[in-house]
Amino acid sequence: MRKLAIGTALSGALALTGLVAPAASAAESTGLVFTDVTVNSGKAIVVGTTATVKVPVTYTLTRPADLTIDYENTFAGVMLYRGTLDSMENEIEPESAPSCTTTATTDTTVTEACTETLNIDPRDYLYEAADAGTWKAGGFYGHLDQDTDASDEHISFDYGFEAWGGLGTARIQRAAKLTVNASPEPVKKGRTITVTGTLTRANWATGTYSGYTSQSVTLQFKAKGADTYSTVKTVTSGTGGALKTTTKATKDGSYRYVFAGTSTTAAKSATGDYVDVK
Image (cartoon, rainbow, N blue to C red; front, side):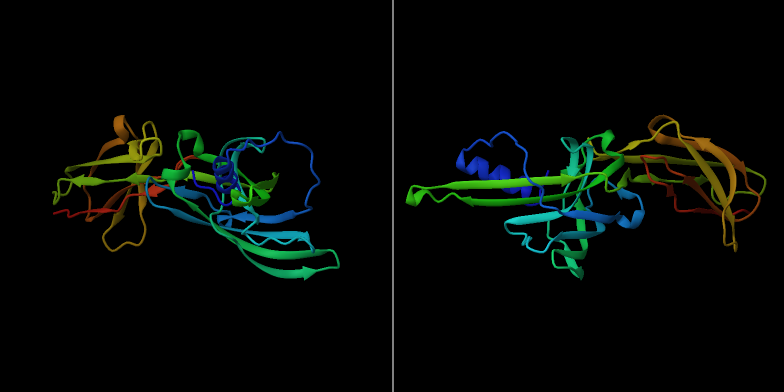
């Protein structure tokens, strides 16, 4: 799992120096305030097995006027996580600094409108079925100061980290694939057409698409020259996500399967398969 600054820098520095982090103790808050957090414009994040999905995150950050965040030694941003702040089951952090524009200032505070990008590569961040579902949004701040050059017989290491939860939620869904094949084609009017297909979804544990069984899928038909599809019947996916049903050939047109989606798997429509009726 890749980390911005805090995870990578802290673990890397500890490993480099051979130091062990001291036990956590109460510390004064930096006073950062994250508000108006929106992940992916409020839409579900659909992720397949290989392609990186770029997820925009916008938020308002209010910080003390005397607190500098330079993204070299000090860092702040919004992350997604599962579990709780003190026991995260999984988390996704930005890999680069956000773009922030100052919108207001007072004698003691600076308010900024910020935009960042979460680059979700399923091979780095998503590992199991539990990763499909609702994630929480949280703000974080950290600083890292280190001197690991021992040539002067002196090294130093200082770090700090804060996180704020309850800033919103985001849904991550598995991408689905759906195929359709109507045969025979061409076919005589009144004869039976067999429509087959397969419903699969991303399996992040294996990096492949696996059959999605016991799911309701709609068979739809669009007559030649028409603009919209109409529902013919509903089919339930079987072993390996297999779909199969029959219908009568009445006119030229295209058949497709449509999956409405679930809380963990995105909706998908197959590309229509045209049948010429003689």
